[in-house]
Image (cartoon, rainbow, N blue to C red; front, side):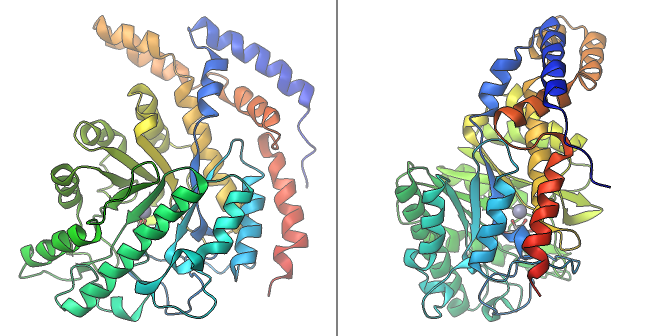
Length: 425
Ligand code: RNT
Ligand code: ZN
């Protein structure tokens, strides 16, 4: 049964009361909203088509998998942009696009190591027209040259060369996006390289990856238009025993090299490790952090992000540490078993709500309790903060930003599904 739209008068009334509740704890709701307005998520294009891309060069591999067969998948750039436009219309704020190299639209097929900015002209024009920044990713998987599960660390110098050239091309394309859009593109390198079973040599591939990265990053690009990032991982399907680009590998690399961001993906660590705890440790000596906000269920399953403890803890760290300016927030999940536009919307709205919750923490009171050594008060305030009227502020924010509050967005997705998605075979 379709829910009736939420009453705007009720939202306004609840907001007024909520502002008072927060004020009583020393929290300025308007200041929190002003900060929230400055933050852009990078919405990942690959949720729209189950990480397939447009090359048709091979099935998804590299140890990642999109499971499910929900109808309505975007089959080309126009459909994917149309779906993204629909998702963006349901998100308060202005958000970026996170694009992968396999979403190129060249006029005639072009190998990945020869990709050029013009192959993304349609994405660029679309982003410019909607005033969105673009972030970018080389695609070092789903390709015959990655069939062994090794790319930048491959023992064959020809294969290594191919992926070095691909990553170099992607950096130039990323810089072109950043220049054209007036907002620095983060180009994030993730390679799947690893081994299913116990390697005899753990050093060799890491040495090769390290020198391949040095070559990839050799060309200087201005930081106003381009930011480099590297993404570590614990394991993948088929790389259970050894991942060349592990967290320690990239953390050390980022520190010794300088000038690059480290990507922390919420699904890329042992299940009891907390990405939230790593942010302050990394940011002391690394230039910046790119987050891949994701939700692993038992493994790096890339489930749709929710307003759960892990996501909330990550956002709390950004606010408590006052590091929003050195952190880019990307989303990374791909669920093919549910409506894909709804998946984007659920995940992105959850990430924004988590950020809003963090901005609405009674931080002065928490810090004062901590400084006084009153840890019972600190714990009590954190606990009470959980049931403050976050939803009332969120709904009012959605109204102000001219997007549907509460679950009203579902009606728009239903309409879009009936008129657009259900017509795709
Ligand atoms: C894989 C990494 C990587 C990918 C995307 C598609 O485990 O998380 O970020 O999900 O590049
Ligand atoms: Zn990721």
